Image (cartoon, rainbow, N blue to C red; front, top):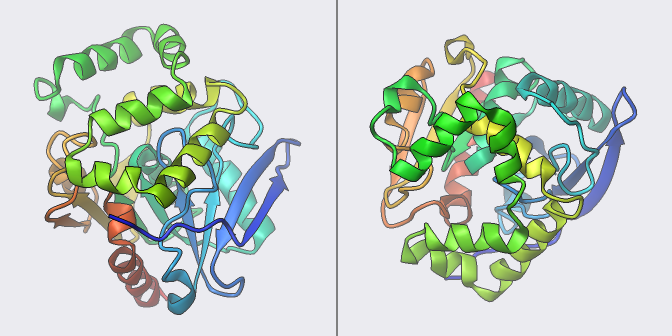
Length: 291
């Protein structure tokens, strides 16, 4: 299965108030409707989505390297609120305003933090990494995941050291091994595979500390109140996705006031790349209604 992937139309770095830099990439018209993309685990700014439709939809898609990944300066000990402040500075520098936002996989809680902190607007969570440490999921997690959740809660430093043992190749192997065949067909299609390998290599170019910090944050308790969210939120899962949420987002959507949950048949975690037009069109509708 082939999906459209293209190199970014624009690449750059924004210098933050404390002197660190945040790397970004953009696709689509520079005067389009801003949509901020928060990528999944251990992938860089260069792996976007919907390259074949952002032009016709008039979307200015902007992706970002989280601190310690790609070209973004490391920020040891950072938390979700720190990331949201960085995004606020990026949006001000790039003239994005308060953009709509897409959080994919491990990028989901970071996107939620941006919405809670008021630096982003309507939100699409796609194949979202759920809050696996939430009490609602106790007893529902596979034993290896439950053990990691306990380690993150009881000894986050050792958990972060464990995750720092991952590499670009190990991450790709893990994703392929935990995905249904229909997703593997997407991930291993020549064009996507090349782009994915590149994004992984870029994400680990400073080492693995950035990925490790992200993972400890994502697998721990999320320190923000989802009931504070007042903007529109759509929660998207593939029916065959068994990796991102113990209940395919039922509990997550129920915790966010007014959230709409979509379950797409015959696909798993590759949903973002196979159904980009639907996701973006829905998000643009939310933007128009909010305006």
